[in-house]
Image (tube, rainbow, N blue to C red; front, side, top):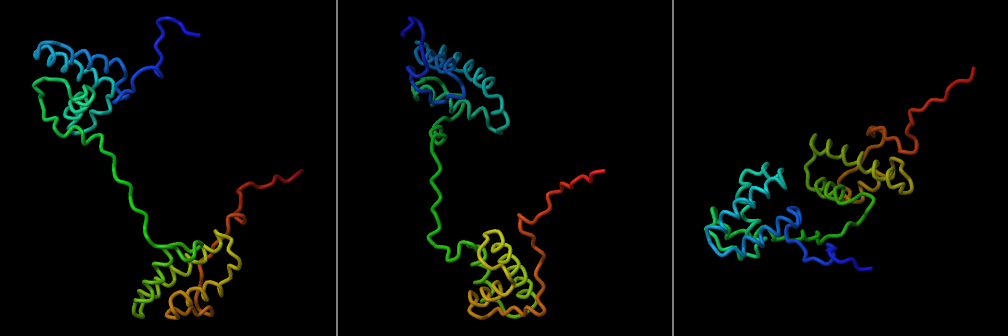
Length: 201
C-alpha cells in the first residue's frame, strides 16, 4: 500500500556522513544552491555549529574544527564554493580505509602449543647454559603443560612435556624430572565452584 507524502529512508539517497543526519545534509545541499558567495559562507558557518551539536564528542579531538569543515566539504560533494576558513585539500583522507594486515606466512606445527611456544623452543636452542636459560626453560615447560591441559591433548604427565621439550629443542634442553618442579595447574573441570552444600539438620 502506498501513502501519499510518506518518504522512506530506503527510497532516499544514502548519506555520506550518516552521523549528522538527513536534515544537516539538506542544509548542506541548500548552502550549495545559494547564489551569493557571502550567503554560502554564512550558511556554512551555521551548519558547522549545528554539526558540532549533533556529534558533541567530536570536541574531544584537538583539531575538531578542521574535522568539521572537512566533513562539510565532503558532504557538499566538494561543490560548496566558499572562502574556506581552513585548508580542506586533505579532507578525502578521512574516507581512506586502512590496508588489511598481511597474515604471517608461516605455519604452526603443533596447534596445541601455538606459535609462542615454538618461538620459545627456538630461543632455547640458541641460548647458552646459565640461570637465564634455566628460567626460560622453567617458564616454557610450565606453559607447555598448561597448553596440554587446556587442549585436553592426550597425556598431560610430566614425561610428555619433558619428551616434547627435548625433541623440539633438538636435544638441547633435557628436563631432570627428579629435580624439576612443575607449577600446580588445576584443569577447569576440577576447579572448585565455590558452592558448598548445606548440611541438613
